[in-house]
Image 1 (tube, rainbow, N blue to C red):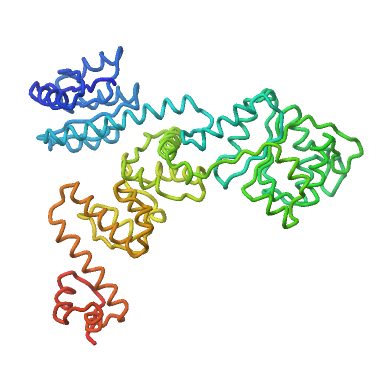
Image 2 (cartoon, one colour):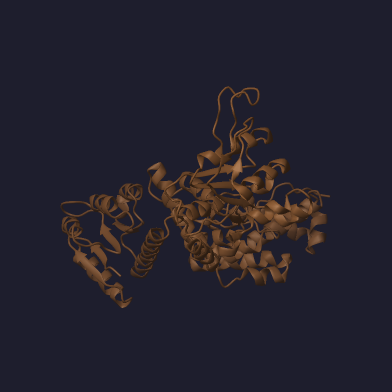
Length: 503
């Protein structure tokens, strides 16, 4: 691991940080000015850089710009005085990881540097993983099986059927099969059979002769001819019309076909890779898919796992998609906090990898700040307004605990609250787990009056629900809750609850 660089003209600050980091077994390298650090960047790089913002000569912001231009993955922590808050904002705009306000607590400084260090090491792992698997990312055992299958098929021309839920990356796998096959130098042609109207699909596949139908003013090559010598990828093959299945079977059987309206037999030297999210065996039993075509396609079956089966890949995929999205927009890549990453890894994401990619694009454009927390994610993912409020800092807004929230959202905050155990306890226990999560979150942040804050939110939620059930009649609500009329009146006033009325 590379050393942590400390850049400050104040010798006492350098000394304090060096000693504190040494106690954590972290190596350091110190500079008394930014210019020396910039020169050192010519021959070495830090794992994390901590720099004062105001120094004689070049400033910390100039050093930040230089580091981000040459080594964008290195986290930079800026040390700033209270009067430098405008500069701190500029530091964030320049890509700083975080800032330390003077005077700072040494323990908190070390904790911040450790967070930056973890981020730096994660980014390094992502870059290495991306270099090793530029086509398809995945470290989960289920994906390793897919990679091994692609390797075994690398020298084969055999027909492959790829199955898996929508958004799992079936076309990526088909392209990888083509790229690593003897046909790699020839065309790869993809066709989604579900996206083309039935009347046009036959022409798309096999082409047509001039005058074959109204509007056919010229002859046209179909996808089989376009893919000659290469690979034809037929996505969503389960949706292919029954009569066209017969023509496809003929091509797979003897390698010959006719253009629509044509009389000359054409030879197809094409490897076919098909894919579907449907259960073809069920469609065969229902008479919607030809059994003989099914057996022709199902020579080698390759099943892609859903994202739920490879949750350990969500962090690496998230960082990759955030990086790609940032490059496309020409902006600094967003970072996802550990809590938010655990939350995202707990989601079912029925759209699989495609949905995760779309989410990362949304984060790049819509999420405020460079570090993304749970509260910054789309509200439809965090359970709507009530849950998104619960996941924010309790000091910023009141918390409303919803007993119908999904258990994985609670497990996402802290691993010690396990989703399976919560689910086994039943839906009625979910709100308790969420309460435990919020309490743990507040305590870890050092928030004051935890009991008072959560107690008021708990009472407020109970009274509001009771009033809703009694159509605002507070006396009836008191009876339902088992408290006195004077008590509920006082609580309504203290908590500022609106909508209550006398019976």
